Length: 264
Image (cartoon, rainbow, N blue to C red; front, side, top):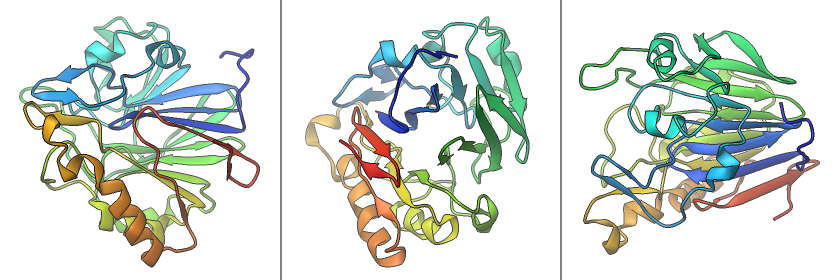
């Protein structure tokens, strides 16, 4: 781990889509790294990722094997000694890329990343890697150090959210995707707001929005590209008014100190 790195108590950088840089307790975690400008028929909109900061990650959390969450070209930008925490069934794909520290996990299991404890949680989502790739579970993660941070990955609402953790500080919740419609296994803004009544975090940050758009549609600035996090904040204010919501734009940074006071 980068012992010399100094960060605020908790620093969150929303790289975009489901990619978040979580910096706490001297450790840098990267979630579902998608660092390219174009993936298939999807093109990145707006801010490009800070590759230098992403490449400094000590560990990577991968929620499932869909192409926009386990992106091999993005992972190849990282050092092959980086710790990868992945669903059971995904390791073979990553070993073939030269990664040497791959931990396969199932829901309910725990591991560590430096001083942080990482608990693997259930997620309600399809885990197959289309069209002919392996099938692996879909996971979420709770990172425990000075703060408890829940990264939901890709998931729909499920009742077991109520028992995932007793004292969450931050929930990173998917509120949309990359197109005008959502298919099953995803939360829309209202369902993500409903999840707050089960998770009961102090702070919620919407993710999985505003980053990728089908080719030819970005110039229109369609509503689905920018509106979902604000719809989430609206529903959260009515369904879970005790939960703070911070909308961080792709490329934006949120510094938190003490009792989750925003320092940016």
